Length: 140
Image (cartoon, rainbow, N blue to C red):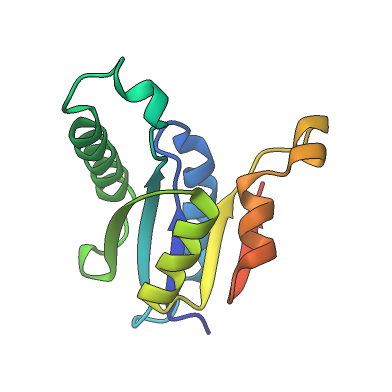
């Protein structure tokens, strides 16, 4: 049913990605299904730039790529059916841009139980659901 599945990942909280991955493994019945993992590095505010090393952005990109690659390698998914992407910017915007670039027909996102803060401010999962142009499965 779904042929291109996107899994947004916060590499600092891999437990949520593991929940989403388990749901995807159950859905991978069609041998033509392709899965892409994406993580988003949020842009460092300009006012903090002077306090960070000159190569901070490069190291953040390398670390995110390394952590995401390790997660993909441990996923147990066939390597020929998996890809990854590291983007820079706002989470919702970049995930939705990756949906279009990858032509995803399903986004599977792990989420925690809502708290009062997320009811008032919203969460990344909520924002992705609200703005996605394809189906979204939220796995708790």
